Length: 375
Image (cartoon, rainbow, N blue to C red; front, side, top):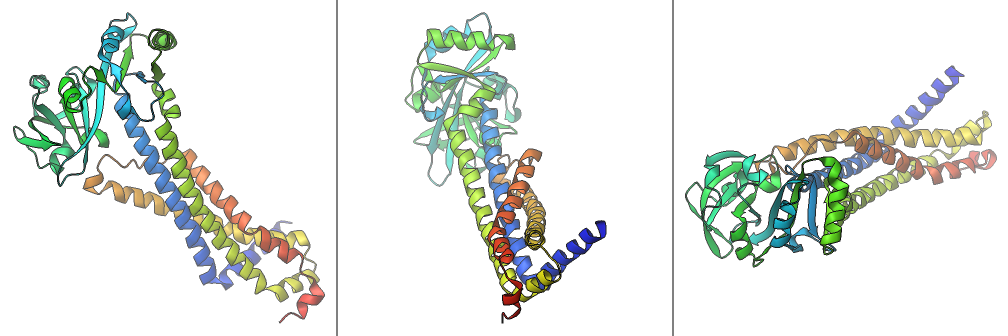
């Protein structure tokens, strides 16, 4: 049986080699589909991870307004921040205000309203300036390294943000792309600038004991019915914007794989139509319907495997290439999850095999006597 399987495999490889260009096009179709899916899903997952990192900086729980579509629209009263910060189970509660503003000739700028004790200020690498001077004056701001670059700002310079001018007292570097391209304002200044006096977007909570998380969440629910408290992992799973990004990534990738599968189907149909007499001869020489179908599925599976492996290589190289672009520093995460890679390869294989379904059924229906008269 082993020798028979070897001969069968050689037959499959020979059939693909006889139509090199057609096989190459099918492999390329699967490869670029896999590369697109892997790239899109990885980039969007990386973006989700970075945004989650902003919220989970030295914290375990996020408190924000219930039933908001986006955290930029969330409003958490300052009175709630002060109250929660005084709870015995809470180590510290840091209010954060998110805002987006555009300036002439500059991209959209993300602004963070923070207190001086916030971990983003304390733990960042200060390239220029003195951390202890943050929030001493209302018009002072600190810029991420990328923000300083595209705003052409330097220490002690004046920078135009929206319709107001601010004094740059520091430039810092973070591993998070969103923060590195952001502007850090004193919380009070951000509240005035974005007309959200007396509120913040979220509160990031650090507990003395992580085991008190359930008690804390129930306490927030009981005392502040308009607010919701979620642990970092819960927030990442349930946040509507993250769900939309994930669904978009898989939808785009799925469409790419579908196109690749259609390419494989077209290749296999053409292969069967051009080999009708050959299939008839195989049938006369004892090949069963299952063996004929196995040959077609084997060719399709081989094309899919080669395409998937090539796609993973192309996608990985493309991600590393994007990371080398200075403008995208911090925004591209090339850490491809093994689980994601396995799912993509399996989907490519299933797509290729599904594409061979009709050609295999057609080949099985070929009658030897009629096929031998086929021109």
